[in-house]
Image 1 (cartoon, one colour):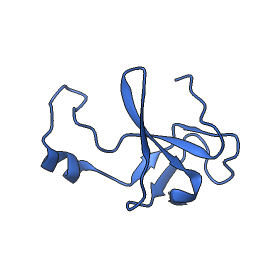
Image 2: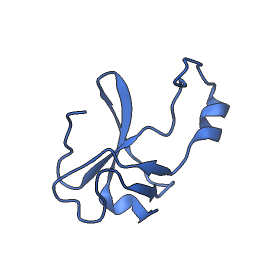
Image 3: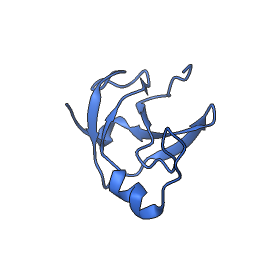
Amino acid sequence: MNFKPNGSWVLLPNPAKRKTDSGIILDDTSVNMLKTNILKVLAVGPNCIFAKEGDTIMIDPRGEGVVVELNEVDYVMVMEHQILGIM
């Protein structure tokens, strides 16, 4: 992926996938059951001081992220302050 977030934004995989890698489309109940707040960092902005690309982090599950589409794949972007810790 050739995307670099701005500022202190962190790019993460979307934990609410509607379609599995094998192509199965999930209903709302299944999507909610499979959500997680432990994700691998895909990219970080230049002002991030806590997390780096490749870290496994825990984000605040009450926080809101911005869903972005890059190369026809949905990702979530959160601000670095929403990170609770590194695993």
